[in-house]
Length: 176
Length: 213
Image 1 (cartoon, rainbow over the protein chains, first blue to last red):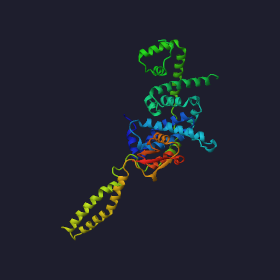
Image 2 (cartoon, rainbow over the protein chains, first blue to last red):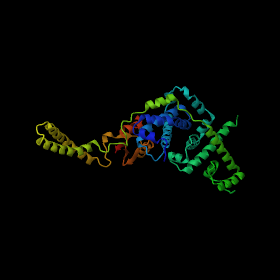
Image 3 (cartoon, rainbow over the protein chains, first blue to last red):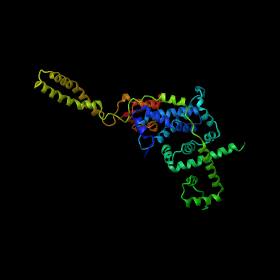
Image 4 (spheres, chains in turn yellow, purple):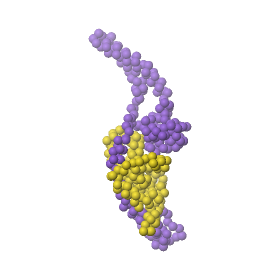
């Protein structure tokens, strides 16, 4: 399987930090979009992405070339999102205060918008499927691999997720 | 084809994506023309698809990227790339060679080059033999004792939860982990790598994590 990240991954596996930084550069916005759309919060998404890249860096020597690097990275990110969600549930909200990054304005605006409100209403498995497929452009095969379900299930989740999303958007739009 | 049953989600999905063979797509269109429920469902799916695809990528703030890069821990030792021969094993191999070298040196010393400075080499070779011999014995014993999946208990980590849950979590993080009896074995990774990945709060518990090569 051709992986466009292959040469950088090989170098990063041998401990080349510069090569890993290039991989961060390549994937940071996609990973952040994934985490932010799944979590609905820019700060939590930033934490999840940071955690995902650290885990990827540490686990990189164990990465096997059966999968694309990006698929592997998304799986780590989806897991980091799960952990972040559990952590947020446990934490006292008054414990943490984060100063907003001014460059985050667009993300904050988007995550406060109608689409995100509707996404937040979806069951997690549907949200994960539509974000990976329609927002990030992953293939069914990749989604099946990184979520551990059959391709038919992936299609069904995307189908139902999109339908439910339109339903929620419809009900929120009607009263206006 | 209008039947009493509705098409499967997967069929309707392939139809929306344009992935159905034309004959099957035509059959579905006949059904959709007469089934309001399915037609509305398909219309919602198309709307959902459009809305999602119009959304833009969000940018990781640069301050966050800087923090991320600064927080990448050192990865001192590679899990997979190890020397083909361990230092102990190397000594076990080198000790007999050193003995041979000492004998050669002794012959040389006592032979043509006697008294010309070659004697230094002879002494060095003999010293090497004396030094290497006990270590070689220890190395040989060590090698016999650590074959298979034996581990050094002093380097084990512990984690909370069941062995299966711990192994599963480690695999999700990309480690080669499996349950063996009442503990979890991790291959090709160091204690430090796993410890950092687990985080402080999970380093104490009933499940032992051991490291094997």
